[in-house]
Image (cartoon, rainbow, N blue to C red; front, side, top):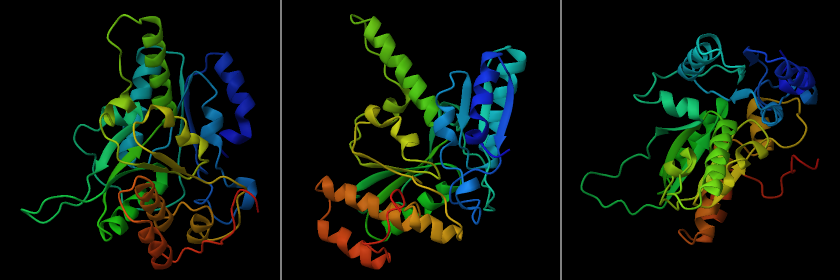
Length: 292
């Protein structure tokens, strides 16, 4: 199918009829199905999915994530008889599929789990590096992993997370927020996403092949400085590499965003950001995808 953005009103009607099943958006991403221009390059289906209460929308990166989600859907819809249905993005890009990390299932279903810690320092050395968190979704998770390496080369420790569902994270946070509102004299509960970053003020940079509004859904529940990158604007007919630079979601732009957040925190010098612009080959006067 051509994605949620083409059939959204029909999906709403399906929810009204208590539909169950799986919808697979097989042309996902505004930079991944390259060469299709604005007609098919999808950067907003996940945003539209967020308005349907009974849709569980996921943006998986790896085959094991899809397997976990499908198993959960079969159990919830056909064993427990819940009136929900699933929307999964599927991308037209080939890249390595790693084995599933131990204990990842719960985080996959809740919407976020730690994928890869920052590279360690040399044995016996104190780790005084500035730290950031990189949240990647779908095929763009690969850009976050590449950015981790670029940041390590610049003395920054970046932890990479796979963000499978901002909709699920937001739904959980809203439910916890409501419970706390209605139970003011009881010990406040903490949402899943808030618990992951509790006491951690390291900047967080989120990147996906969808509009910034998708990761922005969780911004107010995060303790540290948060910055979202995404594919706001019309699609273009170009190569993946050119499109990802145009929308500023490639590894180099993720690296630049992380360095900028660290500079705003006062944890690195602003000159390091300026040098990175030159080293990463990013034109500060390049076209802005949202307005051109």
